[in-house]
Amino acid sequence: MIDEMALRKDLTYLEVMLYELEDFKHISAKRPDIRTMITAPGPQTPGNGQAINLDLEVKPQIRAWCFTFLDTIDDPKPIPARELPTFALVEWMLMYPYYIATNLDAEAFMDDLGRWIHWVEKLVGRDQDTAEIARRPEVRHDAAHIVRRMSSRGWVISKDQVRKWAERGHITRVERPDGKGGYLLTEVIEYLIKREQDAGLPATL
Image (cartoon, rainbow, N blue to C red; front, side, top):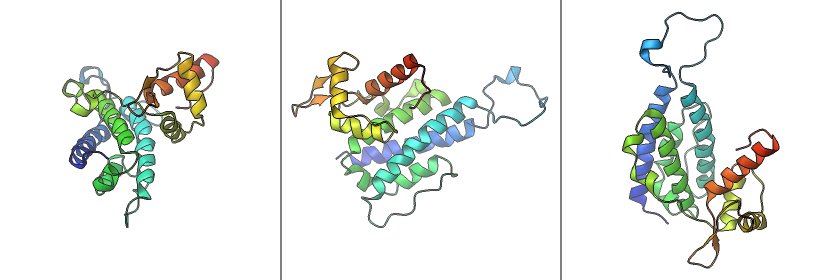
């Protein structure tokens, strides 16, 4: 269980950041002094490709968490449709902070929440005023938890694989207070991305 008030504060902050990100999607990434008012022939690409790409990356992750929480909520409202802006998903979450705070995966969600805030802040120019949550150290989770988190991202891995990667030095392992091995989700993601790149495979994550 996590602090419900801290969760509500951080969700509200992410909502504000996503409103800004939505605006950035329609603003050219070029400096005003080098923009041109002459329209090129053919279909036009929306203004800021970086903002659009970040939104495309974050939105399915937030949506996946909405479905994770859905089954634990009494009489929930429908999850916002896919075509609605990303901030609509966070607004949906803000209706159920108690259920999220008491969810078994609440700590893992807070890890992702801090990561989203950091990414969006950096893109919209607020990285010099980073939220406290974005500076917190990443929590180490056991192998079973890592497997569940990677499954939500489309990866099928096993607990034994996670342990072997640590034994071979691909990721780090630190013993947790409960005696289980603790692993960092970001290290697993980075290792798998590198493995794909080395094999010349298209990116999955």
